[in-house]
Structure formats: structure tokens, C-alpha cells
Length: 235
Image (cartoon, rainbow, N blue to C red; front, top):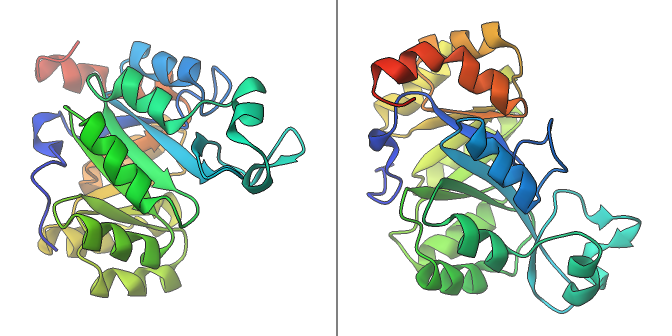
């Protein structure tokens, strides 16, 4: 599991701080405003969720429904007019300014994503993540240099990691014990963790060596590591 050279985690103080769906505790999640707020709070990057609209456009939304509308059945113009943003919008606004953790919630947009990344190449590192091993395999087939990460919320999902050319693993906090983190590091696989919003938990994860924390409370995450970032030259 060799780390892709476009992941670029080494350029950041450890742990890298990512806003989960942006700064979801401070602004409507998965919106341009939430992503901007996460960066204003001091995070180096953002995590976002991508789904396909009924007319096969990539829109940013975590759940399969938005305002009682089923994403997969609605035209993108309707969804964007109702408050969602597109993946193109996010890349145009943030690919030159932030680390991007782009989660694909559904299959079918792999080729579109590859095209958009060529149009808006992330300049500060990125990783494409998914719970779906088949999506990650297809992405790797399209571009072997694209950094991909498997998301796991339970131990049974970890089995797929053995057969995938991962650049990262994304673990729920309940899985992120020091031994598992060490095992992935021994395989040269960076570990990203979500599901923690207490400073004490964040510090424990940092002590265990996680490479990135994906936080809902972005201000708390930054404040927890403020001293460490100042020592590394990051205000």
C-alpha cells in the first residue's frame, strides 16, 4: 500500500485537520459557506460528500434525500437551486487553497471525477474516499496515481483494505486503536479518523499517531492543536 505522491500529507503539521462536511457545527453542512468557515477556523482542508443527481451531475450532499427530494431522481438545476452546490463549484473554489477529502457516496461518477480533477488539480493534496471498494477499484483503473482511501465504520469493512491499492485508510474513532494505527503505518498507509469532537479524544488520537482528524467542531480541533501548529510555523 504505497502512498501516492499527490496525497501531500507530509507538508502539514500532524495531525492534518479537516472539516467534516465543512464546519458543520457552525454552518449548513456540505456548503461553500461551511467549507470556507472550516478554513477560517484554521483547518487545512475539508471533507465533502458527493452524489449523482438524476441527470448524472455530481452534487454535494451526505444523505440520499435533501429537503424531501431524492437526489438520484432530481435534476441538478433543481437541487442547486434549492441550496446544494456542485462538485465543480467546490473544486473551483478550494482546489488551490485546501486539502480535499472527497467522499463518493455512490458509484457512477468515477470518470466525471477524474475529468474534473484534471480541470481543477488540487494543489495542496487530496484523497478520494468511499465505503465502496468497487468504486475505489474503478478509480484506480482510471488513474493508478489517484490517491484513494477506504472508509471503515466497523471491523468487517477492514477486510477489503488488503486487496485495494490504498493511499489512506479512513477509520471511525471506535476502530482507531493504537495497534491498528501502527499496523497501517507499517504498511505505509496514512490513517485518517472521524467521529471525535472532544479535545481529549483528539489528543489521544494524535498521541497514537493518526495522520488526520476529520472534525465536526472545527474551531475546537484547531484550538486543541494551536500550540503544536505555532511550533511548526502554522498560526
